[in-house]
Length: 206
Image 1: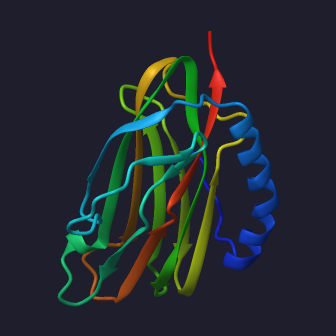
Image 2 (image 1 turned 180 degrees about the vertical axis):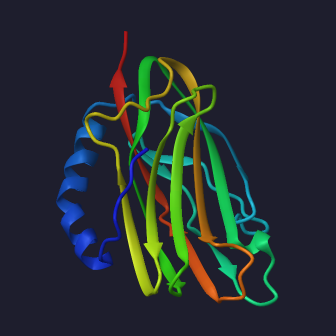
């Protein structure tokens, strides 16, 4: 499991731009040209009512998803169920045999307000259906804190999470926010917003 510390929103975004452009160029130069999304589904308490994710690849290296956002809260008149929320998106990709893919980058941001003694967590877990391995990135924010956070999920060269070497795979992206301890009257909130693009890497396999 991988973790990232809290980072300033604007500084992190600016520092990542050049690297992201290089990654995207490399992906486009080495990718199957007829990959397509054939199915998409979603589940979770944080998925908005009527939420209908799009399912397109703008090019072989970019998966387009609609933006979404949700929050977890504690406080008076709040149920312990309100202290956690998640939205899991399942995307089935069809691609030529001899190829496999992985996520290369995704970005998340949000607001958090936690008093002393409380903790807020924003986390995303990536895995393929039928594979026991996964990779997670998170922000763990200790109170007192009142402000923004930003997270760059970057899968480097040592990334071990790849789809099966075949012609079809189901990618799962599960994003959650949670607060602890639960069952408290203290007011706290943590929210997360997802960006609309998820970058995809490809490689050939034997």
